[in-house]
Image 1 (cartoon, rainbow, N blue to C red):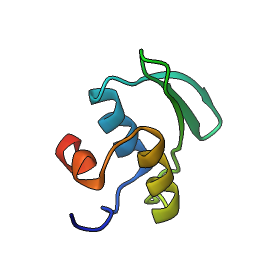
Image 2 (cartoon, rainbow, N blue to C red; image 1 turned 45 degrees about the horizontal axis):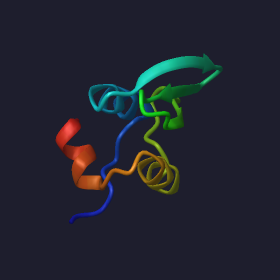
Image 3 (cartoon, rainbow, N blue to C red; image 1 turned 135 degrees about the vertical axis):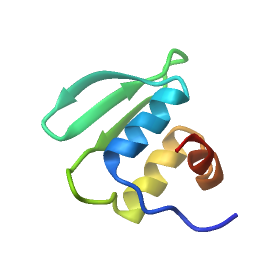
Length: 74
């Protein structure tokens, strides 16, 4: 397992959508995604910026994914 990829919030949202999540609402720059099984995660989407590594790690932990799973969805 390699380290975390450098990705934007928009790419993370698209990857999570392909994993079954759907955007429930958007509040400013924060996209709230919900999975049919009840999991909810908030992803910050700031144009032109990659997500901070700690934030990405937290998002992946909440959705029960590994960095490799994310890479496969990108």
